Image (cartoon, rainbow, N blue to C red; front, top):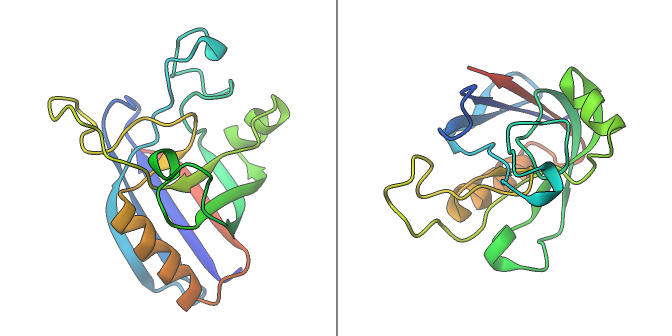
Length: 159
């Protein structure tokens, strides 16, 4: 494991949390920066973003193995940078969510929200991922590369 990302979110996911990264010696090498772990009020999850067991809802707490993958097909949705894919649940609610079919959880960027009155502005809710600003996503990917790339871990917790 070359890096460990830690993201912490309020129980009320309408509010932003923080994300930071440590290298394999335990030194803080990125962050903390603002992050949003709020899912969508999508019909697929009964219009309830809070049920983390369901696809498109809030990102589940727990620990995951991660790898960096190519940018997504939509710059609006994912931003122009590479993404961090949670490719294996290791512990906590992450394991329950994975057994319920959640498999496309990532850290990515994307275009900002346009309504500055929203509590999560300038970030936007995702379909179950963690969103960073495009600038912070670029810096995170650079920090992962500097730490040696490859596989890492992410721990998601509530504040």
